[in-house]
Length: 149
Image (cartoon, rainbow, N blue to C red; front, side):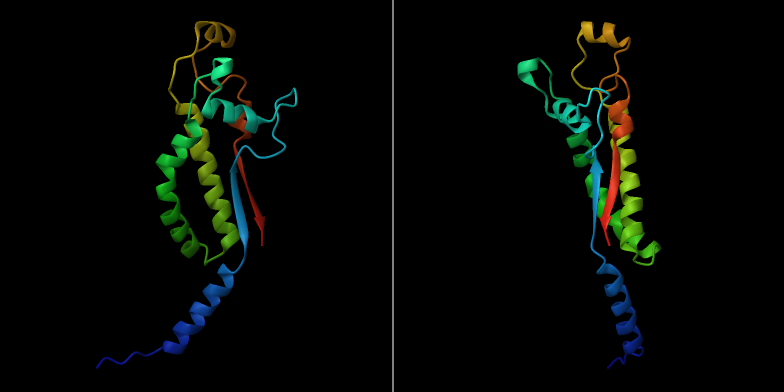
């Protein structure tokens, strides 16, 4: 029968890791409260309208956010596991790094989105056919916040 050595050291190390993981923190990524256009309109409202569409206003869905979550979220769990190890199980630092990465994914999703083409009048007004980017306010407003701990 095999004999194990170092059981107490393993137990102590697991207790240290568990204590570090007890830091309760929350990560929010997206268009957070306080982000507004110059006229006071919340960026989150405009982002939701773009993402889900507004048929009565003639705005088709452009699901940049839901597509990004669908495409990228399978990577988040394994990435968090690696980050926890590399940060010595510092929950806040792990969530900050995760938030920064997801913020970048969201901004890239805005830049890369191609869906229902813009109407000719919209292209004339904007001067280009790039969807989801007019003033750049939504792109600049994509951010993250770690709360707690």
